[in-house]
Length: 509
Image (cartoon, rainbow, N blue to C red; front, side):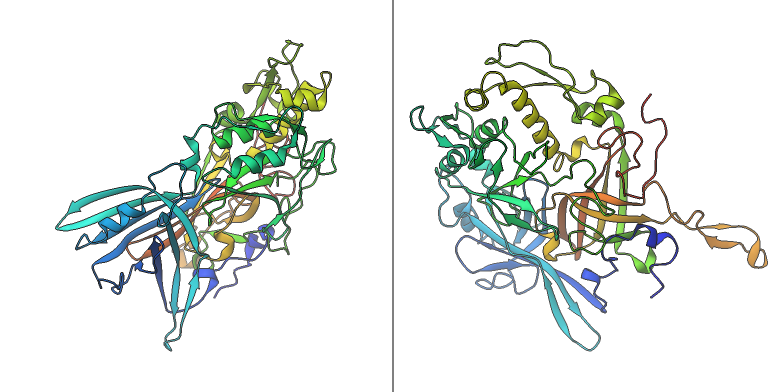
């Protein structure tokens, strides 16, 4: 193989250089596989001709797709020659919002079978996933039946359920975390994890220390107010933030586990505070495992990249990410419009009128916890912290975003939460014929070699999608890049300080 670290590649190297082949494997044959198991039985439907052994070769998987940002979704198409699986699928379909009964789960796993010329075989598997079947579509075509299953976490079940419970009482108050756990213990039960991102990209269960309130959070009587479970918890959390030892504090982003349908993750904002990012961004560095590594676009034999499609839209991000002011809530005696609540870089770059107006409602709990003089100020600080944390999953509001489609990769790092994990991209400009050297035939070259706009150490991975169909397996990474004037200040390069990125002109007046 050619020297893959030649030229400008070394300038953007962050983490391991990702070579072609599944997980960098070199072999003569790669075959994708996937299996699903429906209900509480052990029967597996696969892509092979031994699929569904209870009735051999009558049902197999036609296509499979699983992806997530903050909430996983899976779609699988099953070809059923005899129609014998129809009853089992209907039986497994979730029908009652507050009941998760036997047979409603679907399990699945996917990966590669690697074979060498010597006949040696090994399997590269993904983690094992579980989901809830939420929708079934069936069609008849060419004498066969095709079933299309849509699956996901318990979000669909709890989204339409309205809760009218009060957790705690005025004379017997409970902590915020106790209220959350009590609410989530209702049917269908949800397991709540309080987590912090580690340097290797894994999640660690921690005890949150709430700013000004310590373990468990503030005391109160918590009303659900006929909202669904997640909306009620979002409202409860909004006025408070996590104490990370800094003056800012940290917000929280809620996301469903990709592999467990009943697990809700409360993740402390993994984005770095000002001045904390290192060369490879946030919580990772060049010699740590937290980075997804370095991929070369247009790298030939040095790359497993199939397609890279970036887009740029500053105006969308200004409108979507800015927090342009606050309007006082019903419990606040000061009804004046509050200015200067945007992050400092946005205030400098766009002025006080850019972005959306944000209404901050002072809840009874925050009024009691902070007192009349500080309730509004502290609630606003907390909401700004939560807006910042939400950028981990707000890919639709990114000024610079991209899809990176690579050869399918089922390794564990591509099966978990992606929050604030970075990837380095080296984009090689297209090769072309130029000049009259080489006896008048010209040279096959790229000038300049690296595209300095798209090459960057700090592309952030927002989400992952795995797709297996028609004998192919690809993984698509949803990426975003911090844009000057939106997240870092307008004098910073694309990706922020340490990104080795391009500095665009005319960012702001």
